[in-house]
Image 1 (tube, one colour):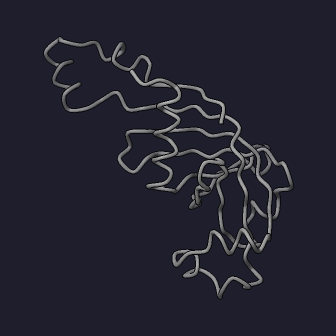
Image 2 (image 1 turned 120 degrees about the vertical axis):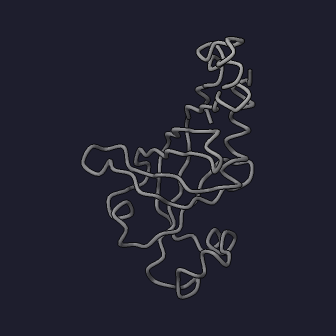
Image 3 (image 1 turned 60 degrees about the vertical axis):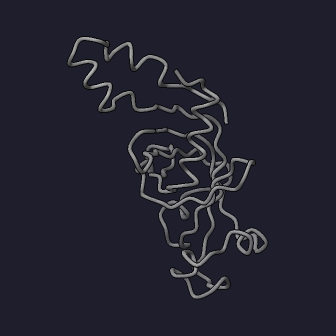
Length: 160
């Protein structure tokens, strides 16, 4: 059974490996989420999202806007609902530091006037680890385990 700290560590590793989340603002009017690619920023736990200034989220977000990100790992063995705040920045040093060939493919260089950079500062998350596997399914079919008890301890709420 993983500890909350172990689930948090798995979440950050998974985000490093497969960084697509559904990101949305928490207010009711603009609360729908959209798929966005995030860039993790080392140990400081900030998530960065390059987008355009015409993106609805950029147009409606202001410094400290409450936001959420829903995440499913590439192997669908880890899920998370991450809550925090977003702000929009055009800090050139951050753009330079985060810039890579995948981002460059979408823009006309680092000075492209349509670039917007969303900073997502996570506050807390609920993280779930998949409790099903081929072995777990066989054990359940043979009556050797209880799927409800196998799922116990596979969820944690963590402060980020």
